[in-house]
Structures are given as C-alpha cells and as structure tokens.
Amino acid sequence: MRPEKLGELGNRVAVRGPNGNGHRKAHAAPNPLNPATVLWFGTTREGSVKVDVFDLSGRLVRSLYDGSMPPGDNSVAWDGTADGGGKVSSGVYYFRVNSVDGQDVVRVTVLK
Image (cartoon, rainbow, N blue to C red; front, side, top):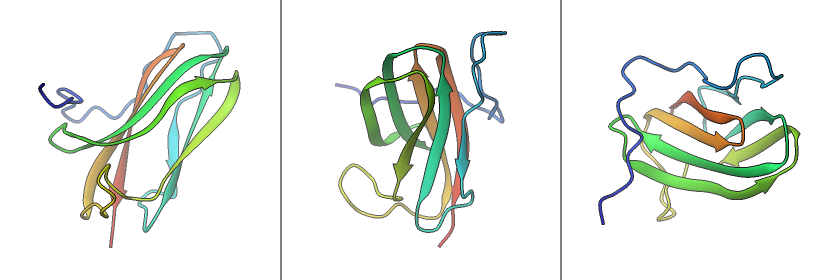
C-alpha cells in the first residue's frame, strides 16, 4: 500500500470550499506553534469530517480526526506529534480538512 500524500501544494495555502454558503475559512492558532495548536473550521451541516497533518513533501504525518461533526464552528487540537507518538521536527506542515463543505488546506509552522 502506498502512503497517503497531500499532493502538489506549491505555494497554495488558501482554503477552498463552496462559494456563498457560509463556509468559513479554516485557520490554526497559534501559528507558528510550540508545542501545540488548534485548527478551527466551520461546516454548514452535520456530516463526515477527516483531518490529517502532512509534512512539506506531502507525506501523511498524523491522522487527527475521522468521524462526524455538527454544523457550525468546530476545532481539532494537534500537539505536534506524529502517528508514532514522537514529536515532529521544526518545519512547515499542512492540515487537510475534508468535510461536507469540501476540502481546506492550512499551512502551519512548527518552531522549537
């Protein structure tokens, strides 16, 4: 099985979602983070949400959430660890949020 990859990001850090439906841009705070951050995002209706963290090369670092969330403002915390439990290195990482409203990508920086 091939590892999951975020894909080609280039310099794109903008959030994408349906136009005109009240969808809110995702953001992380604090950013840069040390040692943790919270990803905030909005959904327009209840449904499936998946949140993953990827490194700069697009490799999956950590799966943070995979389940259902209610409509409105939602959040997921990340403590700067990888799926194996170890702390990630300083650098740039990306949150990818897949929800009923589409896909959002948020760039975060880890500083130690």
